[in-house]
Image (tube, rainbow, N blue to C red; front, side):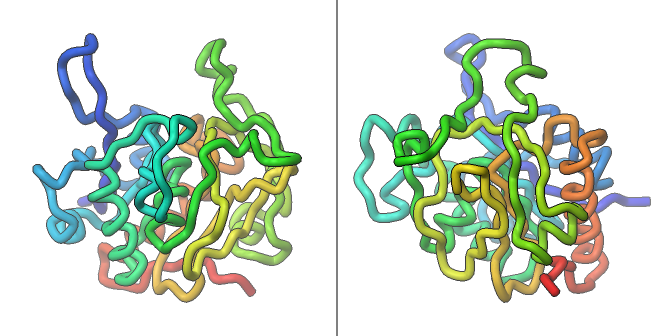
Length: 258
C-alpha cells in the first residue's frame, strides 16, 4: 500500500568543511516513517532547485524541521545583530511561503523548533534572538557537552491550555520535554494560538486558529525517541492521520478545541 509523502525540510551543511550538502536528521525520517506511518522525502530548501508550487503537488504534508541557522530578522521587520546568529536565507525563501500556503489550503504541516518559529514568522509574528536574556526567562539552549541522549534529555515541563488542542491530544495538561533552542516567539502572528508554555512563560506549542487543516507546531524536539516518548508519539501519530486524510482527499483533522 502506497504511503503518503511527507516533505522533510533539509538544512545546508558542509561535509569536511568544503562539500556543500542538503541533509535531514535520521531521527526526523524515523519519526515520519515509524510513527506517522508516512514516507519521508528530504527537500532541499532552496528556490534554485524546488518551488513551493512543485512541493505542494509532490508532497501530502510537510515537516518543518529544526536547524542551527535562524530565520533572518528582516522577515519580521528587524535588523540583524550578532545575537541573531547564523542564517539560511534560501530556506527562509521556501519555508515561509510554504507554511502560508499549507495553512491556507489545509495541507498538514508540523513545525519543530526552527519550524515552530517559521510558522509564527510566516503569519507576521516576531522572535527574540536570546530568550535567556529576557527578565525571568531560563536558558533553553542545548547543553554544549554530553552525549546525544544527555543533550536531548527531558529538561522542563510544558503546560497546555486546559481543554485545548494539545491537552486533548496528549491527555495531560502538563508534559515533560527536551529543550534545545536560543530564540523564541516574542509576538504571536495572525491566527497563531499559543497553546503551551514552559514554566518561565516561553511559548512552546501553537496552532493556527481557523485553519482548515493540521497546523500544530512545537518549540521542543519531539522527533527524538518519537516511537517511545509518550509526548512525541501522539503528536506524530496525529500528524500522520492528517497527512493520510489529505492524501485521500479528505479534510485533514486539526483536533479543534472543545
